[in-house]
Length: 337
Image (cartoon, rainbow, N blue to C red; front, top):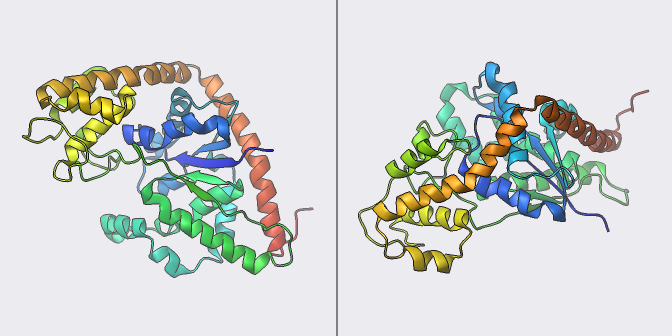
C-alpha cells in the first residue's frame, strides 16, 4: 500500500526561528518516514508583503539548506522551490475563478495583516489562501501539517475541493481533486515570544530579542534568554494563565532537553529565574549546534544544494503538471498539441 502524501512549506523571509522549527519542521522530520513528503520554499507567498529583491534568492537557498540541516531526509522527502514549478501560479488562477470573494475577505489572517499594511494592501495578500490551496492540491496531498493559525486556510482549501468537484467533476469515478486533512501536533506547536508570552514567536516582530533564530550564535542566545521577559514569582510551573512567559520557557526547556513534563516539573519547580535561565540557554545552544554545523556544511557546498533543488523541481513538476492537466481537462480546456 502506498504511503500517504504530505505537503508543507516555509517562506524565505530571513532566518527560521525556534517556533518554525518546533512548531513545524521538527515534526516533519520526526514523521517523514511514514509519508511521501513534498517540502517547498514558498517564495511566491513571500512577496505578498514588501520584500527585498536583493535577498529573496539567497534567503530561498538558506531555507532549503535549513530543511536539510534540520534533518529532512531525501530518501523520504522532496525539497523544491515553489516558483520553480509554474503550475502553482497557473492553478491559482484557475481556482481564483471559482473562489467567492467573500470567502477571502472573511479570512482572519487577511484582516489582521490588512490592518498592519493600511493603504498598501495588495491583491496578493487577499489571494494568499488560494495560492496555498493550489500548493496543496497540485500534489493531491492527504495531509498538511498546519498550526492553529493556518487551520482556516486549510478549511478554505477543502471548500474549494468540494466546489471544484461539484462544478467540474460530475460523472467521474474518482474526484478530480483530493480533500486534504490537517496534521496537527499540539506539543510545542505554539512557541511564544520572548518579550510577550501571550503572542506567538514571529519573524515579523520588529524586535529580534523576541525570537530565537536557528542560526543565532551561542553568545547571542545567552543574551536573549538573559533579557527575556519573566515574572517576580519564585518557582516554575506549567499552565498558569497568569504566568504565560513561565509556561513558554518551561515548555522550550522540556522539548529541547527531551525530558517529560513530569521530569521538567520535578527538576525546575523550586528554581528561580537566575538558576533556570542559564540552564535553558545552555540546553538551547546544545540542541541547535548540530543544526548550525550541518547548515554551514550545506551552504558551503552550493553545487550540492543546487542539485537537490534541481531534482526536487523535476519530481515536483511531474506530479504538479499531471494534476494541472486533469484540472484543465475537467474545466474544458484543450490540451497542448
